[in-house]
Image (cartoon, rainbow, N blue to C red; front, side):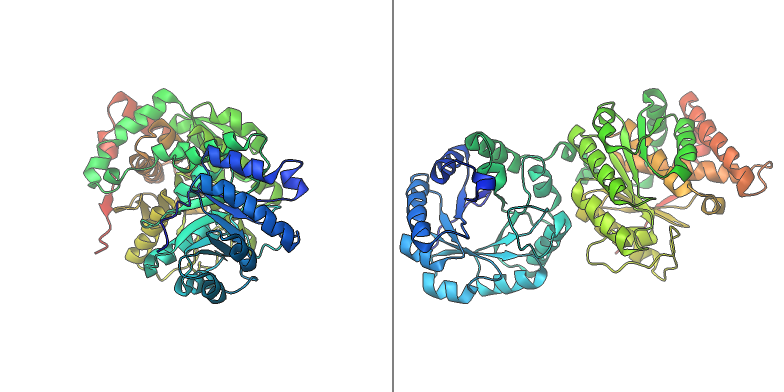
Length: 525
């Protein structure tokens, strides 16, 4: 009977000079085993059979001393000759049924899978584990069919969980110390997690394979820096009154802390966003260059990624900034502007959501639906929401699903704004139609939320609701003023009311403002 296998840190060897250099493969593998590698795959696509067998025998003698299984990539004949524990086969290698017939039921057989169809075939065919990927671009595999990202890994895990398949999973492709914790944490969905990660160059090319393995073994088991600030299950479903009771405190916190609001946004919106940040009590900076983000992230504020302009250079800067704020454990607000409008924007959404963790995802109906994996999006003409026949319940369920999958707070804006962290979905019925008649008002809601989550990071759901209410009620108050005749006169009045609301809260006279809040829980059952 096949033993239980620990796949948590799975080493895939690489004998090419570009990766291994002048090092001895057996020495590298043994040092990696000392560091905590739990499974080894010997992969060599170029050597003759005699060399493969000889090297695999040496490796097997080493792995047996550490009670770690050795698998051979592709070559069933080599595995038989050596008597090692099993093989790993790709989609273009020998088929699973043949490998199982030759090696027997006790052999460990893993299969590469990059899509649902391949996963289903391997799981139903009796694979012991799946090598899921490629997650990120990597030079170690020349014939990569597709880069699936963290989102693709999560889709596969959700399918496995839904079908109840017992197959184990490791992900492969560009996994290293900078991303392993995030990939393990972020790919988990509905109780199904990866069983481990497969690593190539991060160990094989390391100057000290033992130290590299020790670090990776620890990181596999450790949540990333930003995970500690995710909304806790006990915070996800509270009564509206419980949330409302926190609003004055949160607005006061913004005023006293004056948190940095780092906006990466387009030129059209920058001036307005800076004025909104100042009005709510934050300290704005408009900085689109990703290299600045590491220093800015250390100042204790929040990042706003506003996807107004999508270019290759801009996307690179977004991802650099996202990583910097993730590493610092500081909150990120993501506005997927026009996410459903073009293929380029849909691809950018996948890159950003797969390139790091965002604490708050804010968008209109079309944009939020475009962020859901496998969900057809409403085609957008531009940044407008587009028409939708979906009921409030359907939209609320979609927002909640995205929040659960991403472990983020989701804000779906519209006539009624919806806010959820994966539990209760809150409907906020405030605001005014003028908000939809002024360029940048949606973007600036993200700026406001960045201020509240930076000032009150231990309860990002309440902080997000506070930002939405501050923004929408100030808009309604401004629109009702006698001096406001339309969108043109609305903007300065709106900035005034954002400021006035904040000042009233600080002075303890904000009860009248708070009574305007119209927050309810959407019935989903």
